[in-house]
Structure formats: structure tokens, C-alpha cells
Length: 420
Ligand SMILES: Cc1cc2nc3c(=O)[nH]c(=O)nc-3n(C[C@H](O)[C@H](O)[C@H](O)COP(=O)(O)O)c2cc1C
Image (cartoon, helix red, strand yellow):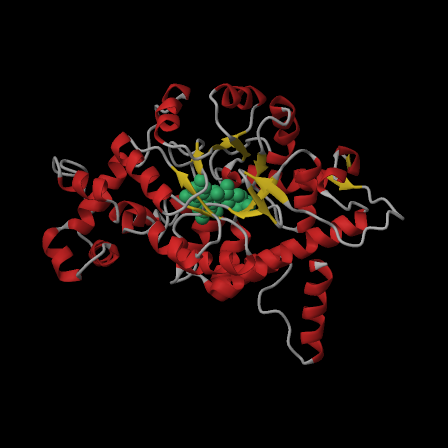
């Protein structure tokens, strides 16, 4: 039982006077990450849209759903495994795509890839990663990985990203629908901090042959407003020149650092994206396509009609629409609309194994871990990510055992009661 093994390992360390380096309580974990990170970087990760009502609501929805444990069911070894797109996973956790991980740790996505390999959970490469997917693919060995796509205004770039993802052994393409533009985030607006403008989180682009061609074609950013020439602007220029692959001096001379950022801003996303665009992607990859950001049952039905292979019920961790419905509240209707024809995953607000149990009970096939693993990364790098995942898996295992559920099939809506 992985839950008891993990518990015993921690308590045994305590006998020798050692306590876990990575806090287990989600709030203390967040506080530890805040201490480890620069203030603007932490704010970027923690931020939600507007008043951050949806960030709180995601958690409140978990609190409204109470587990009703059943007794004397003789559960010795709970089995939480799940099969997704032909691969059996020992636990129903995946690492959500999170951009700009260099804000948390110097080794960024590569440290996460190593941790994912160590604990055997799939990693979803972010379109806004700090390291190119090829580097992470190498660090992952045979461990599973998916690729998350933001649909650029350039279809050629979309094709290139998808082809690279296939080449990197990705087993699914996750198309994120809820971020055709960045939400209104006061915590980032107050310090006027958007990492992409400093050349952070654009490694998938600067490593891409199509992007590099687009960057030099047609005068990237011609006529776009320039920042005022202040010492900070100079520091930023140095930062984004350094972020560009290759020699610093050559990049400075060529102006490629700034051109990359300008071109990125121009082609990052396509607000006009609609259901009509999906066939383009369907025709270009045989990989399963998973739509991330679905919250309405009608959209789930359209996803089925569009022939996609999976859905992630997500509100982007409350970062996009302030006041948006909590994902756990949206899940039952989406699951009912899909009626078992597609796997439905969930993220936003999952902070413990018991939260995962609740999501499974309401119809999720698996859950994505977001901020908690980023905080683990900030506190202790690769080891920190692995510990966060191990703790979640252990807690789910113990929750299943203590709630009297030996298998996934036994975790149904009747294991929960909604209060309030
Ligand atoms: C700092 C940060 C960056 C993110 N970047 C991406 C991204 O590049 N692509 C994406 O699809 N989702 C992104 N997300 C959303 C996550 O994939 C996930 O939906 C969210 O973190 C889940 O909420 P939680 O953090 O409350 O668990 C990001 C989230 C955070 C906190």
C-alpha cells in the first residue's frame, strides 16, 4: 500500500530527527514557495483573475462535497489505476501544463521531467515552457508525456509544434481553449509583470524552425510600441537577449532576443478560434486530442461531435474568468453529457488526495496537478516535485482504504454528500 509505505517512511525519518523538507499542508507549501521565490514570480504563479473569487470557489466546491466513508469492506490494497489512451497509469494524476517554470526554479521543466520519470506520472509539456520539449523528452526516458497547445495565429507554427510533439513521443495533444487571451490579473498588473515580455516562457518558440523563420520575416514588431528607455528596460533587454538560444553577443548584435518577443506577442494566440478550426488539427495528427477548459455540458457534447478524444474540465486554476464556475461543480454535468464516451479529466483546486477522490466520485477519470507541484519545484527542485506527487498518491490511497473503496469503480457519487 503506497499510502502506508509513504507514511512509514516519513515517520521513520522522524525517529532519526529528520522531517520532510517539503511541507505537506497545501497552505504551508504555498508559503514555503513564496519564501523561495521572487515576489513578482510568486505572484504570477499564485494569481487568479479579478478578485480571485474563482480561485477560492474551486476550493470551496471541494469543501462542499463531503466523503461518506463505508466500513468493514476489507480494503487491503486499493487500486486507483486508470487506463488513458491505451496506457495504464498506476495513479490518476498527471502534471498539468504550467508555463514559465523558470520562475520557480532554474532547472524548470527539465527538473519536472526528471521528477515525473521518478514517480511515473505523465507530464504535460506546456506551450509556454521555459525549456524546449526535446530537452524534457530526453529527461523523461520512457515515461509518458503529452503536449499542450495554444493555437497560434500561424497554422504553420501549430503544425510545427504538433509535429515536434509527435517526434518527442507525446501520447496526446491537449488543446487549451480558455486562454485565447490572458485574463485580467490584478496581482500581475500591479507590478506590471508579464514574463513573456522578458523572454521567459517562450522556449518552444525560440527552438522552433518555423518560428525562427517567421521572426525574421516581415519585420517583427515593426511599428509596435517600445518601452521607455529606462535602466529597467536595459536590464530586460539583457535578460531577453540571454534567454535566446546561442551566443549572447551574437543575439545582441542581431536583435533576435527582442524580435522573438515581439513576434511571439503577435502570433501567440488566436482569439477567433472556433469549433470550425478543429478539423485542421484532427487532420494533422493521429494522436488523441484532448480539449482543456470545458465547463459547459453543451461544449462537452460539441467536443464529442467534433471527434476529440478527451476533455479536461478546467478553469485554468481561476486565472481566466473571475466568477467562473468551480470545476468540481461543472464536472457532473459534463460527465453526464459525455456519458462515458470520452475520458473526462479535471483540474483547478486539487490540493490533496481526498480532493482527487471527490473528483473521481463525480466522474473524473484522472486529475491534473497544477500549482502544488510548482510550489514543490520552488522549494526543492526535482525532489520537491516528486514529493508533492508522492504525497498526493499516498493520501488518495489512504482515503480509498478508509472510505471503503477497493477500486475506482467503487468510488461513485454515493460516496459523497453535497452540503451547503
Ligand atoms: C503559473 C501557471 C502557468 C500556467 N500555464 C499554463 C499553460 O501554459 N498552459 C495551460 O494549458 N495551462 C496553464 N496553466 C493552468 C494549469 O494547467 C492548470 O489548469 C491549473 O494550474 C490548475 O489549477 P490549480 O493550479 O489551482 O491546481 C497554468 C497555471 C499556472 C498556475
